Image (cartoon, rainbow, N blue to C red; front, side):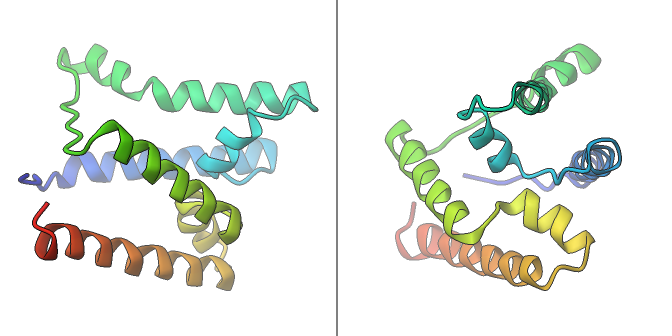
Length: 143
């Protein structure tokens, strides 16, 4: 699988994530952690909080539709692995998020912006693990 380098789209996506994180902190005093938002939808103890998290999740899911509306073409999405591998990967990430006290968006975007040492260490560990995983799967296993 060939990965295309898309600097403008990556910059635009990163800017939108950063703006969303700043607005959520400014208006609600909350950190934008995508996995925490998804996990919070499983709890129905505070309906105002649940509605906020549901709106954030819907907003994230609307991104491809907004691109389709703006450009007339949907983003190309390729998943070169089986659905079982996607589910297992999601479960592994969920366990890691539980032990790590947050996800890549919570630690990587918001925590690093606040100069949290814990988030900096977490982000470094995410990156090292992802580099190693890509190296092993692409170069050692040949996937």
